[in-house]
Every structure is written in C-alpha cells, then in structure tokens.
Length: 302
Picture 1: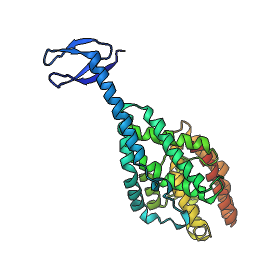
Picture 2: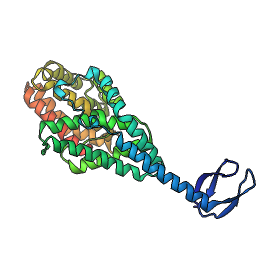
Picture 3: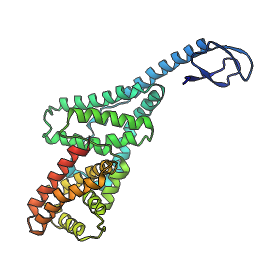
Picture 4: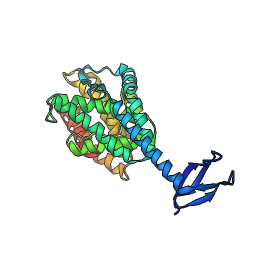
C-alpha cells in the first residue's frame, strides 16, 4: 500500500496528496515542478514543531484544581451535578483540546498525556499522604475521577479523547487492581441520578424476561427507599451505585455472553439477596448487595 501525505503546492497554494517516496512531480493545477522530498521534509518539520508546541500547551493548561476537585459522597448533591460537571469541564477542556490537536498529528501523544494525567493524580495522593486504597480520601479521588475526570475527557467526543480515557484507565487499573475504574460519561451518570434506577437489578431482570414492574424489582426498590436510604451510610452507598452501576452494565452489555452473565448474577448474587430481604434480614441483604457490587467492579471495570 502506497503511503501519501497532504501538502500545499509552493506555487499555486493548492492542496495536493503526494506519495511519500516521490522525488519530483509536476503540480496537477499549475503544471509547475515540485521538489517533493523538500516539501515533505518541511511539512514534517512543521508538524513536529506543532506537535511539541500543542503538547506543551496541553500540559501547561493543567491546573491543580483538575486533580484535587474532590467530592465526598455523603455531601454530594446529585441535583447540582450538571453544574459541578460544567464547571470542571470548563477548567479541563482547553488542555484536552490542545491534546487532541497534538494527537491528530501523532498518536504517541495519547500514551504520553495519559501518563501526565496519571502522574499528577499520583502526586496529589502522595502530597496528602494517601498510601492505602482503604483510606477514605482515596475513595474520594476515585469518585471524583469517575464523576468528573473521565466524563470530561469523553465529552470531547473525538477518537483521540476516547483513546486518552482508555490509556488513563489502563494505567489506573494496573496500579490499583482492587479499586478499578471504568469508562464513564456525563449522560449515563446524570441519567442514573434522575431516574433512580437499580441498574444491575433491572438489567438482570430484563435479561430474564421479567418486566420493569415485576415483583422482584419492586421489592428491591422498596428496600432501597424505605430502609436502606435511611441508614447511616445508605444515601452514600446509593449514590455510589448510581455512579458505578451504569459503567458495569455497559461493560456487560458489550460482552458476547451477556445473557449468561446476567443469569449468574441473578442466581448467585441477587436471588440470595432477595431471600434475605423477604426474611426481613435487611442488614444482611445490604451487605450481600454491596459485596455483589464490589465483585462486579473488580470483574468488569478493567
């Protein structure tokens, strides 16, 4: 396959697509001779200079607030999430746009910039003395990345942005396999807050042919609204589910054997949870459900 490069004729300024191994050619528009090698060398030099400049600008535009915009789930107000996200996007988007321009010149920008983002988060954790994954402050960062950082990257809606999100998440999940993160976006998270959906339970019931108003789903919803939400950490945990459940379901939906996966979730995790619920063992049911979420995060947020 012959490789081509887009250049501008130095005489008539028309854009041309030329084979990279050509030496001399006549412009199809003005019929004047072109030294292809010289023209390609000049373009590559300009591209390299632009690449370095754009990547430097992207890095320079990363302010500290991007990496320390923490939220605590207990204090998190889902009703103002759209405004919070809009603010965070505003302080991050200029850097992301410069990155995307650099990546459009050379895709090696993706791995480099993902490393920059990951290192900045690592430095922030170290500066606060956060060394263990069970530190509550570590979880605050984890939620912040899922609610704001990754969705802000995805909001750029370019292949370069999605590649950046994938590379960053790969670095995070390699470093923290017990606390993995998945690819999130603003629309799915905000939709979860608005609809108050039991995402995983709903997905499993739907896969098994049960309706949205089935007995099992209504039992879980009643448990959530009338008991669990009134416990000390209930609202915090429910908010956590709304954040991570859509990402888990999205990952399962992309698998080739999703029907089998949902049937296993139902048989091994949701059904025992439902039996505890019907027996009035609400605390045990909550523990069973939380263990299910944790196991699904480790399996599907990779």
